Each structure stands twice: as C-alpha cells, then as structure tokens.
Image 1 (cartoon, rainbow, N blue to C red):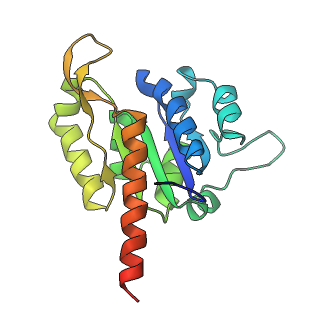
Image 2 (tube, rainbow, N blue to C red):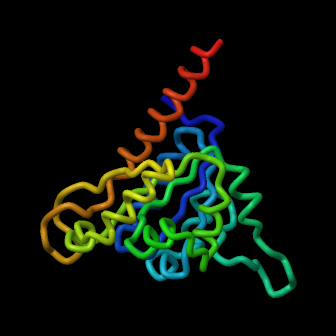
Length: 191
C-alpha cells in the first residue's frame, strides 16, 4: 500500500512521545506522502522545528505569524490543502481544546479549519487517559467524526505500566493507508 500524493498535516503536541513523530514523518514520506508539520509551543520543548523541517523539507508551522513583518500562516488554507490531519502525539490538553474549540494555538486553529478526516493518537499517562474528562473529550471528538487511534499498553514515561502510550508510527501509517484504500474502493463502487 502507499500514500503516494497524499497531503498530510501532522500536528505535534508537547509529550515525551514527540520523538515518535520524527519516525512517523520518515515513514509517511517513504510511502509517498507530503507532510506539513504544525507544532504547539509545548511540542517545540520536546523536538526542534529544525529537525522536523529537515525531515519534511518544509518549514514547520507553529505560530499564526511567521515573522514580525506581517507574514501570517493561514490555518484556513492549510486546512483546505490536506487530505488528512493526524495529531500524534495528542496530549490530554490538546484533546480537550479540540473537543471544545479552544483555538489558542495554530494546531487547534488548523484542526477547526480542516475539511479532511482527522486522526488523533493520544499519548499520556494511564491515569490521565482513563480520567472521565479525557474519555468524555475523546467521545466528543468521535462524535465530530474524528478517528481515534487508541493508545497502546506498556511502560509509560512515569514508569507505570498501562494504556496511554502513543501507538507506534508504523501502526499509525497503516491506519492512514487502510483509510485511503477503503475510501478509494468506496469511490469506485459508486460508479
């Protein structure tokens, strides 16, 4: 399977799992996708935009205004450009903001403008993941049509063991490939 020609926005948030985003970018590009990273300010504490830009060949978008010269990044244009948006890792804070439309950063503004399907890969400690507020926010996102890529079980950054690890990049790429493959076969059946 391939993602040839697919335009994917990768939203990156502030999580220890952010290092997996670099691997995900490599996999998506190897499969033929074009990847545009949108990162939260907290995400930049975990991985540098320079690393991400080197992997994607595109400037990383993080702020509404690119420079102090009036140049601004249009979240609307970005939302229309994409064939899919993937938020990986998605922290509890970002999931809450997505569920309630709190557009206080470029990633959430882009999400609210996205016309493409959105995939969310949560990454957090097991107690945060199982908290009723997080579960309610994930349910809200599902009700909006977002696809949740369930976190895996295993050792977490806290050294506790349980559900909350962001799913592996290979699995996330497979979810995208399966989605596009089933979308194409559905489109062919209509004619």
